[in-house]
Image 1: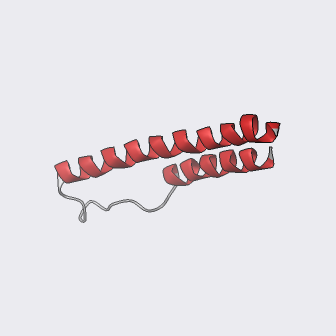
Image 2: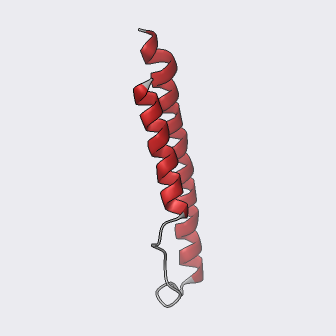
Length: 68
């Protein structure tokens, strides 16, 4: 239960840090519209995969591993 809860909280913390992070592109540094859109799409896709894998691992530890 501790491992599953810690993985879940780390995932939630990573998501919160992403949304409240002070780091972002400035307007002067990011003036390539299509390239910026591609990078943002890549971040969203990899972020969704990261969350899905972390939640699966937490579920795996909670339901399957702790049964034994």
